[in-house]
Length: 623
Image 1 (cartoon, rainbow, N blue to C red):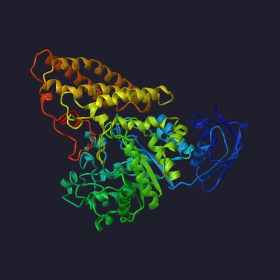
Image 2 (image 1 turned 135 degrees about the vertical axis):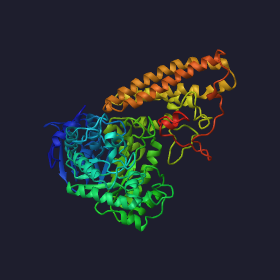
Image 3 (image 1 turned 120 degrees about the horizontal axis):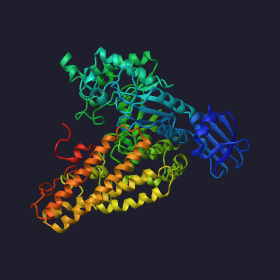
């Protein structure tokens, strides 16, 4: 039953509208005869209840809505005080890796952020927003209209959340630059051509369009992973120049535009470190050289992003390197949603706790979570909610205990935290040791592993794959049976576990059947693929339904093609195994070839494979 509350005192602007939006999830409704709830603007967040009335102290509007979510239910006496260790805690929404979130989905996330107490939403849009005069920018990608973004900004503001644009102004622009009409702007396939007036005209257009829908003057201008800058068209036109010189000159031109628009920029910091790394890496180089320091342009915040390290001391070291650049630094951590259909919460938990602990100690004012959708956005973004809760609870408590996270997930998301934690079981199983920078992602590897060209046979030898996934399927059936908004999500994972269990029966025995010339086993395996192919099709339809409920329709054609390919190859494997079982051929060469290790390292750890092209075949897939 909803708790009736009667609001009075100092309240956030548009509080009644916000409470109406939050009421279904918060379980509270305004009523004159309700429990008196008096607001008071103060220095921090406090909730005091004597069992009959409530006083809420808040310093920011977002804290008022978090405070409401902290009230005991049923109402009981309490005295709760929280002081955030970061001024700003945010969530970046990746809407550039094929999955463009529906506006209603983003509103759902914003409501949950309000209850969590997260006060910054960041819209990562490489080319997924409209730019007048640039018809190919975001063409057939589900780009947002000005009206959609402006309405989202209004909604976020109502809830006390700042929404801001995040764009790219140098690298990460392949999907825009690959069109023939845009190639004049290329330095290479990913990177804009610096020092071209056409480029700066284009950047003025996109920065104007990207910032126009938002109240916020904050803008993230990207600038990360601009690999090969100055080594493509720029080299042919101007000859060789030091990349630092090109970066500084280009950044100054970008900031000229940003300043004219009255915006406050931040940018990813990695290019200041990669150019001096022996591996072109971000974290393995020395302290920044004077050349790197000189390349930094005043007036822009640097975003130190790190989703990988597992120990606080490693983050301490990277923050010291950033201090040497003499620019304000903020931090981006990661919720590991980019490793395939299921996220990795073991990695997320360890890296997040270490990273945020270092940031608190260093006095970093702003932290935010990323949840990238690399290689097709296969993990539904709702799976990131537990990671968002981690960031929120650390901000207000300086830690996150599992029991407290579970309580908060029930309140803020109406969700069972166990179902989120258990998603890691899709990628890891007993005895499997994972690489630190590329954690093993068994679900993706095994879903797309070819039934004939089995590249991971040696890597996964000795693991009870089919038994593991067969046990996981009923666990997610049970989570789905609990009902609620996430039932379709958990049903999808039950179906994914079922497909993996069936497919792994084949992977575990197909080579054995061929090498030992066991025609009875060959016939059994071939016959079993009929059911597996049906399960893959059922999974595809469930995935389609889930995608359309969460995202705009664009982008699912990629997953359609992938799962269609899985089904087609299973059909081919079935035909060939039946021919082998019937004595129509002596062998199946792909299955008879001795297996070699692929991502298995000499120390026994297993790296992940994050791109479908490196999973499907030893042959090149595209090009």
